[in-house]
Length: 365
Ligand code: CP3
Image 1 (cartoon, helix red, strand yellow):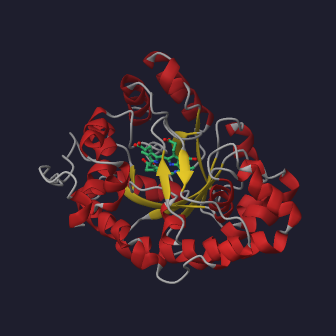
Image 2 (image 1 turned 180 degrees about the horizontal axis):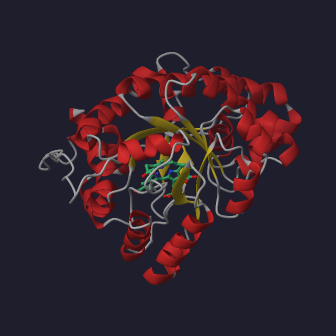
């Protein structure tokens, strides 16, 4: 931890302050857990994918002093970045500040972010030798900093907000590891077609690593976990289960009810495969029809989503509030609804729009 900070020795670590108690009582953690359990709530809980990060001035201030890598690897800094959006918007859940790519890194395949945006893996997996060389032993040990950050965030949240852990799905991680930057993701699909057995070896390795990693997060105290299958939609619908669904099913089965699991598979409409993962909640992206999802998903499964992220950049706050309320009205009476976007907060989202969204949910009855 010391050498992480050595490049900027003059900077003191932030002190982690408990969240201020808001006026009145608020039990965001219980609200989130009740919604995940499809129990009645006073109003749907709200949190946003990628709620921490570049749209927040306080995050940009941290980024002036520390690199992204320092922010995720130093537990006090990661805890601070996790808490920032919850302090500002009183969300009902905090998601640990990290990245899905720390798992490939722990397996021996590092990554970096390009200055202009986008991600670059240090090298790409090319053949079975590269895949066999992955360091499958000691993954949770190398990711210990995530557990340490969770242990700092938990007491700061108290009962105000649920603590969420997360991981990428094996298919999505494999796509980054084989193809690297967005755009080259066709590599995974190509391997799926040309050498399914080899892709399965990689996905099996990733499945075990993700299970160990999520178990570590659960031990550190997360209340629920989300699996991001952000690239699930790259698979043709008839191949989704074989390429991605089955691995997520293995992960949810291994978690075995210890904490609720949310599965977010962007661009995927194979509700059957998603339901068969055993997930407690299913994330709906903004291109899917929320009412259709409500109609097709059984009442025992919670639904999360699906406001269009672009609205946060381009619309006026009144329109954001109106669209937020429209979705809440569509889902009125459906126990187990969690308000969220259909994908992550854009880096250039307007703060007043995030505020309008949060306010609209928090004032909804
Ligand atoms: O607030 C939160 O949601 C927690 C933090 C979080 C990050 N990444 C931080 C981050 C989470 C949950 C993720 C998940 C993630 N990472 C996904 C799945 C979600 C999704 O968006 O589909 C994916 C595909 C990644 C991989 C990734 N990370 C890419 C492709 C990039 C580069 C593109 C970009 O947005 O810059 C990242 C970078 C990243 N991850 C940033 C943050 C805050 C930006 C880095 C910076 O601050 O400079």
